[in-house]
Length: 89
Image 1 (cartoon, rainbow, N blue to C red):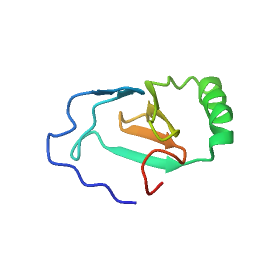
Image 2 (cartoon, rainbow, N blue to C red):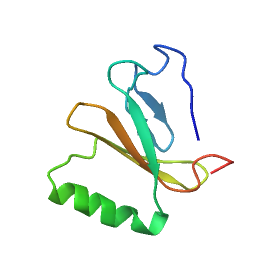
Image 3 (cartoon, rainbow, N blue to C red):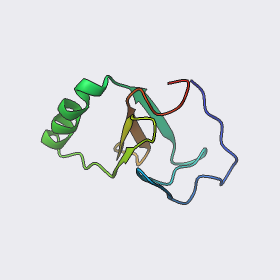
């Protein structure tokens, strides 16, 4: 799925009932998401912790899905996302 954002429209954090979506942009620091199974999310979180990677935010979506956000070495926002975040996923 390709998501397009208004330039500057995601430069501030967004707080929703399920958590905080960290700021990200379309130039400079970028955002990319990878689909993961819900039952593997805890293992991913553990693995990232073992590598010394800090989880910046966890969002519990209203439809039941979860997103984990962290940064790569260049500061880009990486998201691991489970099903149940949007009506189409």
